[in-house]
Structure formats: structure tokens, C-alpha cells
Length: 134
Image (cartoon, rainbow, N blue to C red):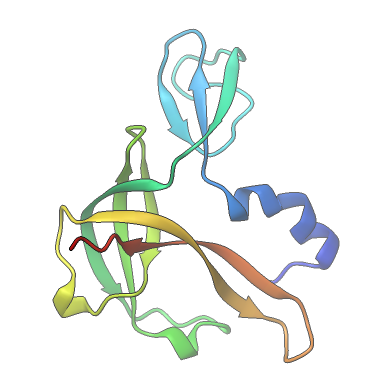
């Protein structure tokens, strides 16, 4: 996902926050900021920032290589049901695969995705990590 600096700044809200669209007509919630409800077509929508807390429903190990992901392979990717009721797919960090299990509570964290070069743009985005319980 290499973007120019102006392109990155235009979409940074979607990279740094989990925005949920709530329909004023049918009441359904969907992930990501949308101008119309994908369920009923209404343009009476409002945007709510998610708390970023949820539950891991399932996960898998990903070996797919892109130009910028060699140093992070394999990655753990999961389906997370956020506390607002919507699902999102995200990378799971801060835990080994043998320590991870379904139904664990997770929270959104801002982490580095890649950089253009040692002196270029550094891209950050949302990933998820298990919430530590004592």
C-alpha cells in the first residue's frame, strides 16, 4: 500500500481510526465510513468512532508475501467482532500463535506497516493485540 504523501494524508482517518457507519433509517451498523447505507440505500447516516475493543472470533496464519511484508511473515490475521457489533479483519500482534485462542478480548493499536526507505514516509495503521488480564 505505497501511497504518495498527499494520498496518504487524504485517507489517514481510515488508517488511524475505526469508523462505523450507523444508518438513521434501518439502524444497522457497518464497518468503514460510507456515504449511504449498504443495506437500505439511505443517505441518512452518521459516523461513530469505535472503541477499538472486541473479541477474536477466528484467526489464521498468513504466508502471502508482498513487497513490504517479508520481515513480518508469517502474520496472524483474525476476524474481530467489535463491541459495537460489527466485524473487521485485522492483523493480530503481540502474541505467539500457540498463545492465541478464539474468544480472547482484543484491542486496536496503532502500529507500523511499512516505510518507503530509511528516510521515506513511514506508514502506520490499525492492528489488534490481546488485552492482558491478570
